[in-house]
Length: 52
Image 1 (cartoon, rainbow, N blue to C red):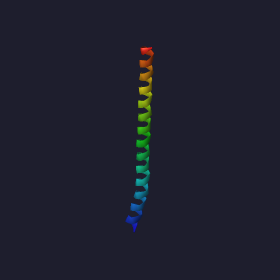
Image 2 (cartoon, rainbow, N blue to C red):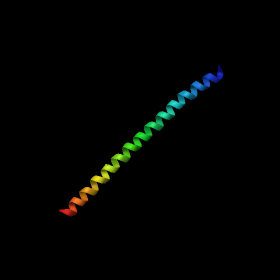
Image 3 (cartoon, rainbow, N blue to C red):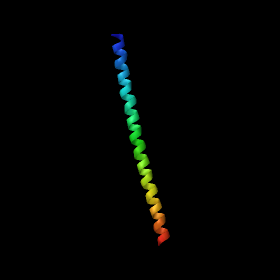
Image 4 (cartoon, rainbow, N blue to C red):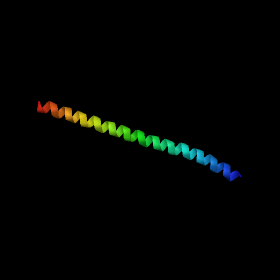
């Protein structure tokens, strides 16, 4: 029975760890995507200024 409680406790921590990893990956992707869009927009603005 002692091993079972340890396993349950590990399972709970595993959910927390996997949740944190998943959320951090999503946040990283969102930040990377938004930075990419910002970079694209800024370069387009520079091109428009040089063309005008």
